[in-house]
Length: 224
Length: 229
Image (tube, rainbow over all chains, first blue to last red; front, side):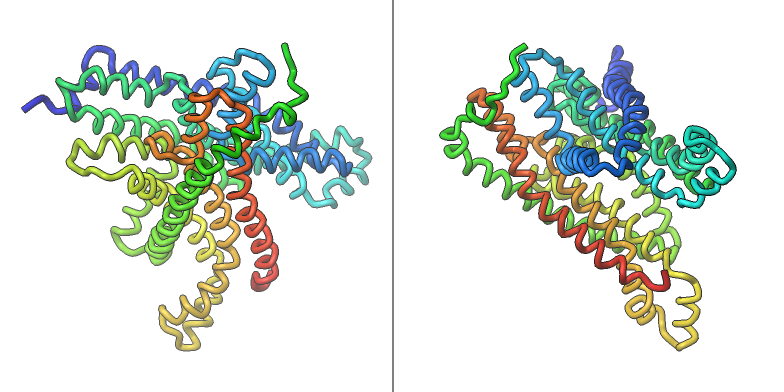
C-alpha cells in the first residue's frame, strides 16, 4: 500500500511551487485590474456621450467582448494577433492584453451604470449653486458613484482571478500546470496525488477569492 | 511589422468548407453540454433558493457553503478535480458527465442567487395578505410569490444562461472536442489560423446572439410585469 497522496504536497518544494503557480495567474489578473480601472472609467465616461457614432462604437466593442467567451478572446490574441501583425506576443502578454480589454469593457459598463443612476436634479442643483462642470463632477458625481462602484470593482477582481485560470489552455505554466507536473513526477510513488493536488488547488482558489467577494458583499450591504 | 489589410481576400475558403462539419459537430457538443448544464443548474438553483428562502434548518447552511464554494472557484479547476482527481477515489466519470456536473455545480449557485433575489423582493405585506385570505404555503408560493418573483429573477437567470454557455468553452481542458478544441486542433495541424479563428467566432456568435437577443426582449417585456413599481 503506497503512501497517501496528501504527502506529495509536503515533498520538497511542491507546496511552494503550487503557490508560485497561483501567483502567475494572480499577477496577470492584478495587472489587468490595475490597467482596467482607469481605462474602464474613461470608457464608461465615453459611453455616456450623446454622440451616436461614439455610442455605436462603444456598444459594439462592449457587446463583442461580452458575448465572446474569454477563452475565444485569448485564442484570438495568442494565435491570431501574432499572425496578423507579425508580433511575437508571449502567452503572458496576450493574456494581460485580453484581460485588460475585457476588464475595460466590464468596468466601463459598471461606470456607465453608476453615472446614469445619478438623478438629473443633482446636476441641476450643483449648477444652481454656481458650480462649474468640473466642480460638479469632482464634488457631486464622483463621491456618489464611488459608493456604487467600489463593491462592484472588487467583485470584478474576483471574476478576473477566476477567469485567468484559463491561461493554462494557451500554455502558460500556472498552478494547474504545476499541479500536473507534480502529479506526473510522482505517478508511481503517489498514485492518488491527483485528488489531493487538484483538491488543494480548488481550496487555494477559494481562499484567494472568498475573502475578496465577502468584502464586496459587506460593502454593498453597508453602502446601500 | 506587416499589417494584413487583405484579411478577407486571403481566406482559404476551400479549407473552411472542408472543415465545416468539424465545427458543426463541435457546436452540437457545446450546445448539448450547455443545454443539460443549464437545465440541471436551474433545477439545483430552484431547490437551493427555496431551501434558503424558507431557512430550512441545517440544509440552508449547507446550501450557503455550497454557494460560496462554487462561486469562488473557477470552472476549470472544478473540472480538473472532477475529471482527474475523483477517479483516485474510485469515482470514474466520462468527460461529458464531468462537464455537465461541473457546469451544474457552477451554475446552480448562480441560478440560486438570482432566483432567491426574486423571491426576497416580494414584500411582506403580500405574504400577510395572502395568509389572511387563508392561503396555505403551497398555494401562496404558486399564486402570489412565484409569479411576481419571476419578473425579478428572469433577467438574472438569462444572464446566467449566457454566462454558462460561454463557460462551456473550458471543457476543451478535459479533452472534450468542443469548438475550442477543434480550433486548436486545426491551428496545430494546418496552421490556417485566420480561418479557424474566424469560424470559431462565427460559431459562438450563432449560438450566443439569439440567446442574448431573446434575453433582452424577455427582459424588456417583463419590466412591465413588475407589480407596484
